[in-house]
Length: 392
Image (cartoon, rainbow, N blue to C red; front, side, top):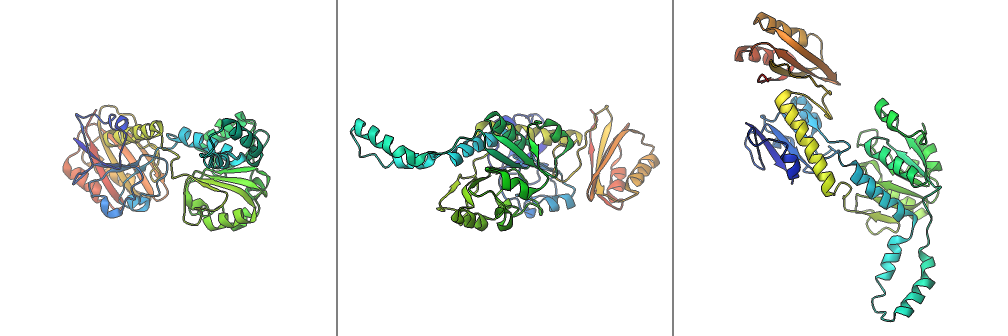
């Protein structure tokens, strides 16, 4: 029986993917096999030695101590794309709010509660509505920085709205590139992209290379009067630099899902309370994906959508399965295979992949290895952890 610790509220539709006959799911366990969480800031001391894997119910994972997990041989999973549509729809709303005087108009109308004469109200609105005139999105240029799951969906929607779309993503994968419309103009220089864009939308993870990417220097290259959207991560924007850009008129508006003290109350800053993925559908999709990934990992050792381990999938063929996490250095795999051979254990199938400093192996064998053999493998130099899975 596997024990899965849940932190934060996880959608029941996701937890239903963990069969009750083989999984216990609860908010408290002394020695859980896995952790499912959303936005909780997980600390290393909260990760018990029994934990085999951690799944973030969402795309961002900066609330998880990934380096610590890697050191302990614990794969960290996320759910890229599961909440993409929810975020995309909020960004479409942000585009219209950034181009029209919608919020200002709503605020103005809310001050007219004392008016009781419908004709007078109508005449007043006809007179005042010019104050809230804006611009149409059609024909404007949207610069998309980051063309992954969400960025590519936003780009496609913008094209459908009649916008011109330019994209920048130096880390674009081949698969992602194939999915992009040929109408999206690829730009290799970030300053060039922001200088030609009427709207700029950010879709990047938090990395050393992206932290404060939108800083004072880059904002100085932005087309004057442009609108900046950040529904990706707070840390990729220098908030104080945005305040200065709004005050100088370099930016007309800044729409973001990450309120910070510097931005609250600043004219032109339109801030939502981190609701990008806050839809029933997105929460369900993320929970389902996270639960399925944890289930496949616990039962079969397969890894998909890990942020620190290599992607690896090996079909079961009926034998016993050994998973081994180890330092990515030479001779470890040879040592493991020698130990199995010395115990007269035949390897039926195997797969080995590495990512940065970590390597991961799935080895299917014809008979159940003894505890002594598993212990020998675990004690081999460079091995981080070993797990034996029953035959299927």
